[in-house]
Image 1 (cartoon, rainbow, N blue to C red):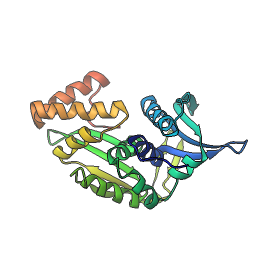
Image 2: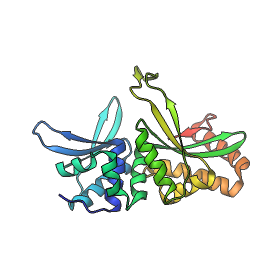
Image 3: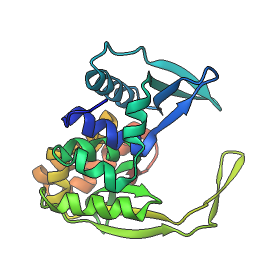
Length: 241
């Protein structure tokens, strides 16, 4: 089965790299699957795969794990699973015609919109976290050309680091890296031409950018604090989601 380059194929590839899986059920049927906590992201992936395969969209399943709700998109299609699961060097040429779709899928899966107050100014950042340094290096190159968005890659946590997640202790099996887009004009360009499929992340970034554009960094920081107090009921001026 051949898959024609398209925005939907590139978006699905990015989303799959971040949160997807190619699974086999008890009847030996192969499924392309995405299970995420945001319905809008699951629906976008579900609709894109339906367009790629020329099918009607599947029903999105609602599941629960450890008290958390997940939205599952699943399609039975072994050729698509093999296509999306290829090594990065083989996959990138097939999604390069629609780089914004690929980055939107990947940032929606593994990215975050950071907004916080630093030195009495409102600061914004778009980040992408992953243990695959090759992937982040490729993303940095794609951001630079054709989007003229500069970014930097940092080692966030070393292999073996541990932290509490509820009652569980998580131990990192690989080094964890983060890619940061942090210059204001480049964060603004990211929001305009790539952005997040997850609406709460996109809304946060756009809201902060509008405040800075309208009020400047210092007054925007004061306004952001007020908005945070109104939503949270306590002083919390740093948000990353």
